[in-house]
Length: 255
Image (cartoon, rainbow, N blue to C red; front, top):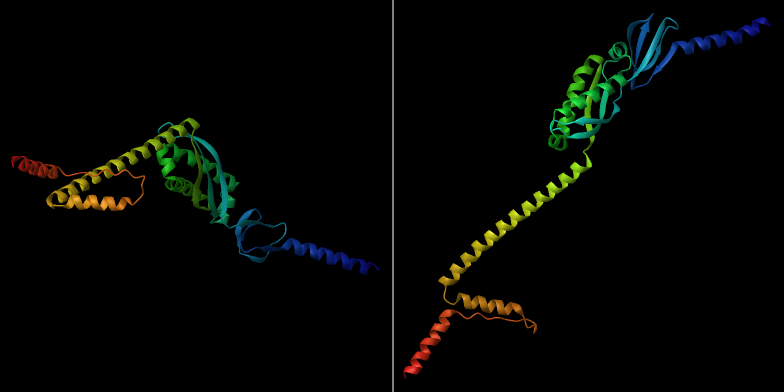
């Protein structure tokens, strides 16, 4: 009877020992193993075994992770206060270094990214920040990646999301943009008037050199008006016609 009771107890003990020994590492993970408190190796994905009490294993996610950079109040190079936030994309490159050298690499990279963002934005003008977000993000990534490389991390990208400026400055920028558009419209209209004047002068020279060209142009204009009775038509009469009529009248009077 006592032997029958020992069998289930032994099986239960074996199951507990197996559960404490067998570990499963997923495809996107790696295991950092410590033996008696000292780093002893990396375990690859799959089933692995550790010695209970003597060994301990920490699983590290090797996938690309994201961290939000909270909104930061920064003074630009030209003394304009702006609010900037962003996002960091990184992954663990060397899990043993990330575990041994940094207590909490997720928090550490977040804090360092905030500092780098303030340094880079503070060295740029407002126009540069608004027009060159990609360049600003690349500069921040270089600073963060250079430091976190020693932590076993790889920063793949840092993107600026929103750049907010004070409301009064927004109104000034809006008026400036409207003035620039009005300036371009005035320049384009002036260039169009200039080209039209040149073309009209050329047409006048052509008509002056061709007898009867003006009369033909008048006839074409009258033909284009159509038969609508509401149109008021003014027919220009060339000055040379008046001169010819004057000569005829003189001859008639002389007779």
